[in-house]
Length: 89
Image (cartoon, rainbow, N blue to C red; front, side):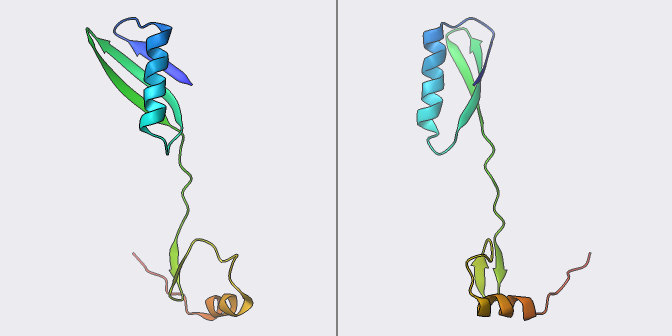
């Protein structure tokens, strides 16, 4: 994990507490770094997160799908036979 402290000094215990806070505050994301800006008695925290994979979802033959791998042969044939329209410009 990358930790950057600017504007002052913090103890290891304080830094660990800010890391723990980020992990607890964002349980659905993986914290990979934190930028801590010390301003007197105040701190600014900016967390960095691991990139979330993007899955494309499209509407095919009336169904919202990400991939066609779970379709049976009939539905795959229906998708292959459909007229595909190209949108220009």
